[in-house]
Image (tube, rainbow, N blue to C red; front, side, top):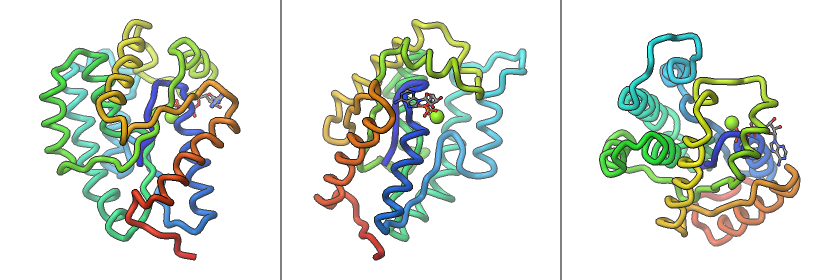
Length: 212
Ligand SMILES: Nc1ncnc2c1ncn2[C@@H]1O[C@H](COP(=O)(O)OP(=O)(O)O)[C@@H](O)[C@H]1O
Ligand SMILES: [Mg+2]
């Protein structure tokens, strides 16, 4: 399953909590993030997020690096974990590429989908939680975080397009992408998220069982 949404929407906070509660329930859980998750993919992440370079990253280059990292991640981490029956929780995945590089930067979505399918071998999440937060609120939360990166320097209009893009994606695949209200306190968001995820698990959307 994947956690998606804008900057500061609480993905990383909630991904950790979800992995802890599923682990406590006895599930085999792999918590990972994009871009990253393998040594080479983390090196690509560094290139993608660095703020110390004067060379602009062309949008197409950005996509190629993201997909290169995703390929490594899928091949070496995600597929093997799914194969052994683990629940994979990934902090950002393909929908971020469509929202940021497609809707945000204006690259052709059809091309992005084809490239992404090629890079992932058509791997798609069983469930995607879209953490929904007004753009300004997310930027305020990010503003207090210490890990500022290249994308934080984008203008507000870019984030508005990304936010609308995530909603367009959710509308297109309402069964897979479930919107979670990210405005309340962390505990309230966790409760909403867990209700949703546990219900899906009971309806066995995942081919996995608790080990104990
Ligand atoms: N529900 C919440 N209410 C207020 N602040 C939050 C909430 N969830 C997370 N935060 C804070 O907002 C910042 C961004 O959260 P984070 O989980 O890193 O978001 P993301 O991974 O989506 O960028 C962090 O400082 C975090 O502690
Ligand atoms: Mg995060």
